[in-house]
Picture 1 (tube, helix red, strand yellow):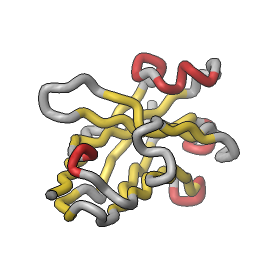
Picture 2: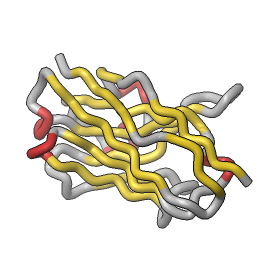
Picture 3: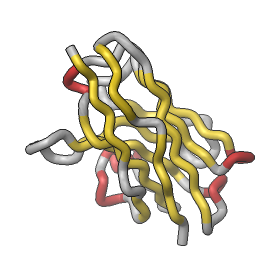
Length: 127
């Protein structure tokens, strides 16, 4: 069973950048498909980005495409979310998730396909 710990959240002005990290332990990180989700107050948790175990395939929500980048470092057991041109609507708690499952592309956009979750890190973007 893998444990996930996110870090890197904080307060940033609109237009700024942050890089979130999610470090895994207790499993073979290189085999996991990894995702980032976020949840704003009063809203449902939503998909942000995902990267498959090989690192060669990535998926992004339309709302972050072109601004966010997901990438992984297997040597560090870490997946990153680089966020640029941040907007106030990006404010949320960001969660890292992992799954060993092999699914259709569309399935990686849904949180129920992920088996392991971190505790979340707060990102606040001020206008």
